[in-house]
Length: 168
Image 1 (cartoon, one colour):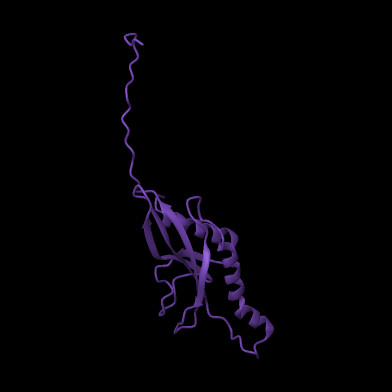
Image 2 (tube, one colour):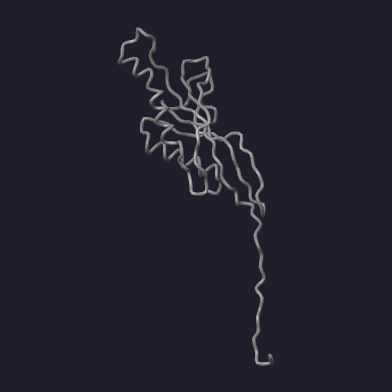
């Protein structure tokens, strides 16, 4: 793949799938968790998106890209977590906190490629929803240099002829 976004996506997807087997579905965020009908995912899921990228010019048409990787961690409805909830149900209903913590420890400070910076968490929040699904949104900053449009230097080779006609 040539796109940095495709490469970052695939690296994150592979890391989540190989190191967090509790996550049953990892994909691009294409709006699967929008409120409405039952989302077409397996639970729990991680959906990956890229937002708010800005670019600054370096030299020779090279740019630095800096923006946000958004991980949406979705959970199916669980039982109540009120004070009267039995311990075994309470632990199950609060498990998303532990899974979010595990996901964060997996991502924080990790680089998805040798040509990228390291992920750094900048925020986390709970999406306000009208259905009973739980969605946590964790945002990480990242930067990389884009050399794809770098000016190509063109050099003409110089022919040097050495002969015996040169007198000192």
